[in-house]
Image (cartoon, rainbow, N blue to C red; front, side, top):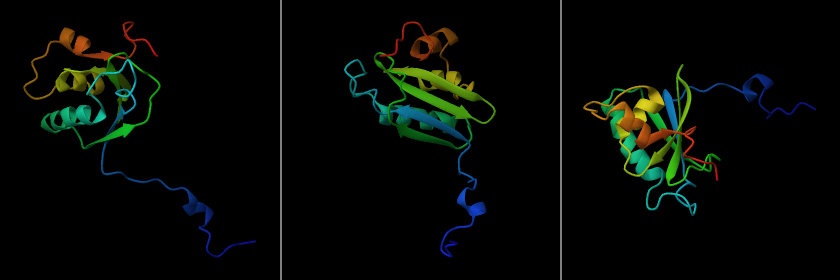
Length: 136
């Protein structure tokens, strides 16, 4: 029953080395929801975050638009990030939020020239456990 074309069992699963060190997942479904932000979605979040990450000297980051993350913050886009040794961080990115504030919450770093106070960061890019945000 051995098929000569079948891959050996050791090759069936193997690890890959991506060209990036961090990953950010941005929910595409948030903009489409009735209680989602209007004219603000995954593409705009990626366009705001990527230059700020590069400017701050962050490791190569892959930003992936995903399907629904099942977090559904009101008038915001759910963004999840995972960095080496940093664990998983999830925020609700509201329209008008500063990329530096989001980076501070997601990765614990500030963007170059970032002058947003920590209190402003909490308002602009609120962690998903904020009681003002309810799953819906």
